Image (cartoon, rainbow, N blue to C red; front, side, top):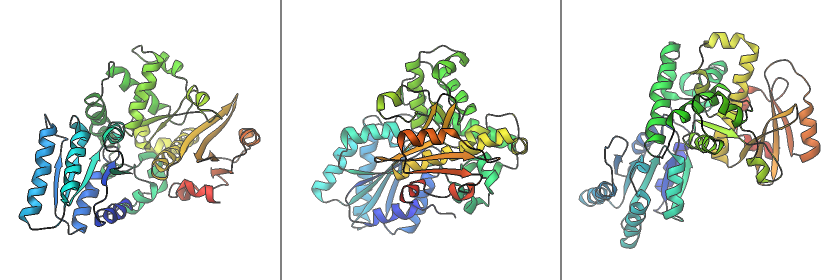
Length: 396
């Protein structure tokens, strides 16, 4: 079975002496549970695994009881440590207060219960962490799969990854494209929106949220004002509501609205969003045309290429701690700006004939970035870029 690199880091941390709660956060269907299955095969530490995903009324009593079962299992097996693994923990009301109490009790009594928490809602997980568990946890982002991972695990080529994206569970279905699209839309997107967003967060207009997602995927890698989006929606909603829903979709690992790069944060937040899917499968599954048709259409293929680069930047930014923006001025545009600390790097994506982009010159004159790079034609090869850590560009 293919093993992601993050598995080595998880294994290393649980092998250390008990220091922190390990929190794994990532979208649905990126293999968090599979990582845990691989982990428990690698380690000789006994474990107790529970999930709140399918429980009708998971509550703090359930969480405390299962934690107690882990302690009992450790005592009865006469072992000095145990792994307590709780999946979809954010679905337990007030989970963070319960985790804090049980963790602190074990710390006080020198009970060696090592804890791994898994969740698919980054917003709800991080809210609980910051409110109750400060200083007690380490966070690991389990992101969508990269080109290198899909190639090594499933033998995909570059074109397949750019179109079908990086959901490992969907890989066996790509030879039946209609079936693949149904799987992405029904089993993945609908489940994420219905279970991870609508059941966990107050959403007054769920139809508006779903329509915003559809439009955002349709215009992935394109700049579109929320006012214009509002005009395309079948149900009215104010701009604040749309912005809030876009944040929910971002934290579910589906869709972001990139901000325009600017010198101050107020101007960034007031900008038009550049819609960006976190996985190109979300772009492809909503279209009526096929993989072969998109590959033959240079304009549409260029959009897919730019969207794949943007998705790679967003997922890498979560792992390697950098921010992703775009920039434009009038008719001139820069595809992506990445910011790490006080430094910025600019990326222009090209999938066809080489051409001069005056936007790069204008941006360079105003902001003096550390580097300006082209991805694709006469630049960093797409195959290489989609497998690299973009933060390495700050070291060149």
